Image (cartoon, rainbow, N blue to C red; front, side, top):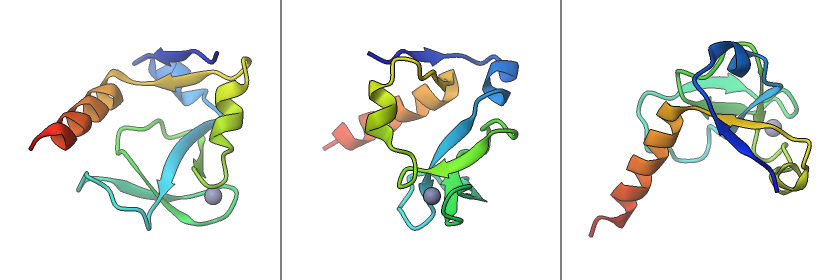
Amino acid sequence: MVKITVTDDVKKLEQAEYVVCNRASLPSIFDDDVFNICCECGQKVRERPYNPVGPKRICTECLPILQVLQDTEATILTTDQQMKEVRDGLAKDDEP
Ligand SMILES: [Zn+2]
């Protein structure tokens, strides 16, 4: 099972290989997303403005997510801020 580490260690985040992004054509619940380009397909992608600057951007179409989740050598990082946004977003979905 892959381990997901929550960290706000900027140095660790900057050393990541990729920031995984949705394509810009997908809807977003945020109005402050910023845009970048997928390093594999060249498509425009959207991401949160606080992501580390250094890692390459890759879209969810190009990154084989299921393969990564089964790779025990893979390291997946996220931040407290990102976890909070996901929690808030899911809570919003639960509202009647
Ligand atoms: Zn791509």
